[in-house]
Length: 193
Image 1: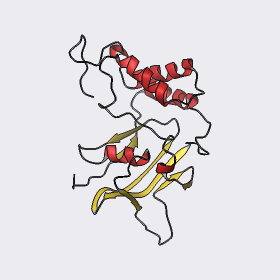
Image 2 (image 1 turned 60 degrees about the horizontal axis):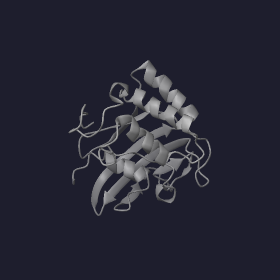
Image 3 (image 1 turned 90 degrees about the vertical axis):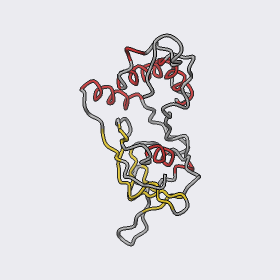
Image 4 (image 1 turned 90 degrees about the horizontal axis):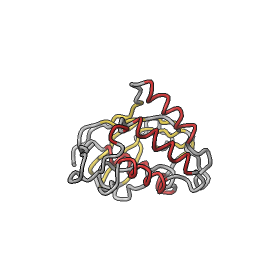
């Protein structure tokens, strides 16, 4: 899309259950580093992303801390997936730049206060797209369990991974449909979101 809209990043804090589960999630996340880096705090400071001359993301400012639940909101085509691709080091199709305000050299992304280049540390930040990595034959629970097995650190034990899956089901309000198969032609059905 040649139109550019601002993508909002903000904390989600509506229910007490979500807050306590998010706090517990932070306790479960690994504190070890990935190739010399630990994800404790990431900052966006005037982040821009463009493809050719077309601006896709413009002047994004945000902060996120390990274990914090963060929501990304915006209209279709506003750059939510693009931002996740940039943060996950999967944005080789465009260029990252920074809006300079002081004349000093600044960096668009900081990890724990130091300049951060996600393309060099792709394993540090990951996300699961809404539709493209759902296995229709598996239940909601099985899909989340499989994703946790593929994405979690090798040293994370099964019990901890399953606790993370249960927390994700709670946070996303999916406990009631945890055993639904994701194929709409079989049994109980789920909607797109």
